[in-house]
Amino acid sequence: MNSSPSTTNWWKMVKQISGLKANDASVPPLMVNNNLIFDEIEKANEFNRFFSSQSNIDDSSAMLPEELKTISDDIGYIELTVTEVEDILKIVNPTKASGPDLISPKLLKEASSVLKYPLCKLFNLSLSTSTFPDQWKRANVTPVYKNSKPNDVKNYRPISLLSVISKCMERCVYKHVYNHLMRNNILTKNQSGFTRGDSAVNQLINISNDFGKALDSGKEIRVVFCDISKAFDRVWHKGLLFKLQQAGISGSLLRCKLPPELQLQFLLPSPPVHLHQTRVGFKHRWVDHSGRCHTSKPSGCSVAIDATTTVSDLALTKGCTIVGLMTRHMSSSIFCGLGRSHGVGIFAKSEGPGIYPENYHLKDTPQCHNKCDGSCKHTCTFDGRKYDSIAGLTNTRAVVLEDNVLCNSHDPYGHKENILVHEFAHLVDKYMPKVDRDRLRYVYNYIKQHGTWQHGYGTANSAEYWGEATSSFFHTIIRTGADPAVGMNNCNFNHLCGTEMENRAWLKKHDIWLYNLLVKIYTNNNPTVPSTLKVCQ
Image 1 (cartoon, rainbow, N blue to C red):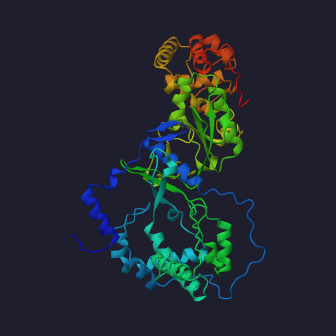
Image 2: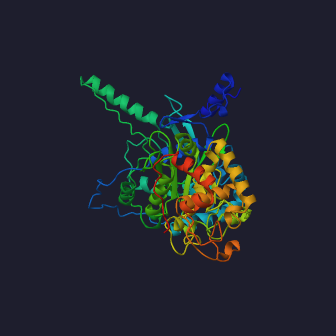
Image 3: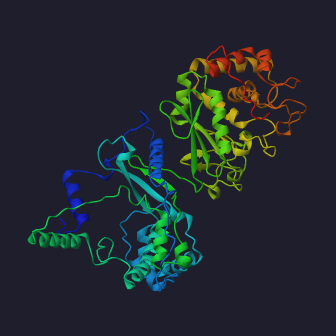
């Protein structure tokens, strides 16, 4: 047995004796809004929402002092030397885990004599331009159970693994800033934590000595202990910057700071789940079974509407309204099936090339992996969910561009139909009762054999037949005439080459079986059929 008194060796011994393993502590099903979550990805998303919410502070009433008192000896720029960088690389602990960039600490340590030159140049460039690489702002986060109920996210704390390179740069900067603070006597002598050569033990000794003197003098001792919950998450950023300025931190060094919202990649233990989250971030709405939109998840069943932060609130609200109108008369079983882990994703035009359903053959490529911009027509990953197409259907989301939701004329489909209605219909197709799904397949095969739907996208398969019919049912198909995209001349986009408008009346006249199925699914056979959407007319 190793006789070293270190804490690490002590815990190793405890785990060996008790038989504990690091992967024993898997996250159990989580209770959220009276619903149990079993899916690992959904668990990670719940932790993401909770941990992110802890850093949202209301500083609207917080006021900074009008007068900024600074010291004459300021530090506004740091230029690191190759020797400094090499010294930091040499003391990197090779047994530590890698961060999101997967760069091994052991590699940095053993190759320090070579890596010191490019890293020194990179660190100085970052400091001089006040630019912190986006990859260094990310962390692998593991939720660690604290106490009380293990199925409540509030009883977990996040443990973050940052990029080792970013921590090396941090140590280089820390050395200069710490020396500046000590040289100017800015830190109080009572500061024991995070102070070189000091520790909390010294503070305990000092306070015990003070207590002894007070008792010897016949004085009464009263102590107030304060503990700030989630202190790091609740740091007031404006106040922190103000204090840094007072301490003489200025120039490019002051500007080189992390934004308040750090983008996280979550790792759940046993089994591990690795989720990407892009820089854009997400905002959310939820629609309940009555069709009302909510800014926070309501109790009971609800369908999530996700939008990137660059999407306008108008598009997010409109998307929520559309889903609400489509689902408010559904049976609770279908609606709750949709709400368990499915919903809608809305993206801005700049975040995707506008891939539409007929582009499904475009696959992901290595050079485009996880890059959701106009240069790659492929798979994208946002908010821990994989989107195979920016306008289309994924395993869990109906996805659409903001421009289409708002019916902008320059959108490729904006003058034809609302894609959201069509793609959400595919999710409905997945969760309708089996007897109704079998009925849909039968009706599709019969109609196709008898030639009612001879042209258009709806003839592709029963799923597209349902999607196009749903668009007609809610009056979101627009009369277009010729459509080169599907090789049609003087025809409606989806159904017949005729002159009639494609709507409920058209469906009832030409395809009564399908019409009746649409009424059953979307209105639960309610005598009062919901009003049509007409979202793009």
